[in-house]
Image (cartoon, rainbow, N blue to C red; front, side, top):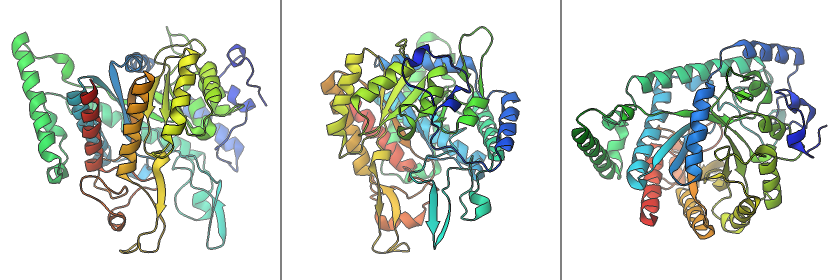
Amino acid sequence: MGSDADASARPWSPASWRSFRAEQQPDYPDAAAAESVLRQISKLPPLVTSGEIEALRGQLAEAARGERFLLQGGDCAESFDECDSAHIASVLKILLQMSLVLVHGTRRRIIRVGRFAGQYAKPRTSPIETRDGSTLPAYRGDIVNRIGFTPAERTPDPTNLLRGYERSALTLNFIRALVDGGFADLHHPEYWDLDFVRHSPLAQDYRRIVDSIGSSIRFLEALAGQEIAQINRDDFYTSHEGLILLYEQAQTRQVPRREGWYDLSTHFPWIGVRTATRDSAHVEYFRGIVNPIGVKVGPDTAPEHLVWLLETLDPKREVGRITLIHRHGAHRIAKALPAQIEAVKRSGHTVVWSCDPMHGNTESVVPSEGPWAGKTVKTRKFAHILAELEQAFEIHRQAGTVLGGVHLELTGENVTECVGGARGLSEVDLSRSYRSQVDPRLNYEQALEMAMLIARRMSSRD
C-alpha cells in the first residue's frame, strides 16, 4: 500500500497505481485475460492527440481567468447499443445549440466538452444488487458488464474494455467527420436544429439568437471582404470519468517532442468523489498524467482534503491543469461551497470552477398515478438544478471568484427523465420516455432552456 506523503517526489509510472487502494474496479474472474486485453489496447492507436490535449489546457486556463466558459455535457453513461449516428449527432446538436445561446448571451468563447467517446463506466454505491432473492454484481456500465440481470451478463468481462475502445473510436471518428464536414459551421447554425425544437416554448427566442448571430457574421465578413475561416468549424473535446484504471493505463503514453505521460483515451478525464481519497489508486494515477483533469467536489469534501488534492495533483500550480467540478445539491451548496472556495484561494492554486447541478439533486419518487404508479424511480427536478446553479453564481460572486463552467447530464433526445422545465413535466410523465440505464438526464428542451437561463444570468451580471 502506498503512502500519500510527499506524493510529488515519488516515482510515477502508468502502472504505479497498482500499489494503492483501488476502489470501484471490476473483479475479473480471469486476471490473466484482463492483462491480455490491456496489452492489446496498449498497442492500438491513441484515441486523441497530445496537441488536442494541450489546446484544451490552454482554453481552460482562459476559463480560469473568466475569459471563456466551459460547457461539459452528455450522457450519464454511454451505451454500446446507442453507438449510432442519430444518437451521436443529437448530442452534438444540443451542445452546439447550447453553446450558441451561451456565446450570444455571455459574449465569451465556449469550450465544448462532451461526456462521450468513453463514458462507459459508472461508480456504484454498492458492489452488488439483489432482486427477488437473487444477488449479483452491480451494473457498472457497458465497459464492465451488462444491464441484464443474469449471472452471465453481470459477470465483469475484460473484452468489454476492447468494445469500449472500439466504440469510442467510432464515436470520435463520426464527430470529427461531422465537424470537418461543416456540421459545426457558424455560418449555418440552422443545420443544428432538432426537429422537435419547433414545439418548444423557447423556439422563438432560439430562432432570434440564430438570426442575430448569422447577421453578425455576415456584417463582420462584409467589413473584412472575405469569409472568416476560423468560424467555419468549432472544436469538440471528449471527457469521461477515469474510473477503470486498466483502461486508462492502456492508453497512457509518452509522445515525441513533448514531456510527460498523456492519457490518450480522452482529452479531459475526471476523478469522482468516491475515488478522490487519500491512498487512492485513482489519485496516484491522475497525479502523473499531463492532461488537464477534473476533480469532483461534494458537500462532504473537507476543505483541507481539497487542498491536499490540489497539492498532490497540481504541485507546480499550472493554470488550466485542474477543474474543480462541485456537485453539492441545491439544499447543501450554501453551507459547503464557501469554505471550499476560501481554502482553495488560500492555497494559491488557480483552478477552473465548474458547477455540476445534477448529481446532488438526484431523488427517488413514487408516482401516484400513471403506468409507474407505486414504483420507485430516480429523477431530478429542473427547479433544483437551476437553484443550485443560481446559488453557485452568487457564492462565487461574493467570494470574488469566477464560475467558469457547467457540467450537465443531458441528451439531444425527447426523453422524460427530469421533471419540470418550460413544459412542466410531472412525475406521471416519467414513464412516457425514460431511457437512461443509470441517472436521469435533461432532455433537449430542458437543456436548451437551462442554457438560456445561464446566459441570461451571466449577461445580467457583466
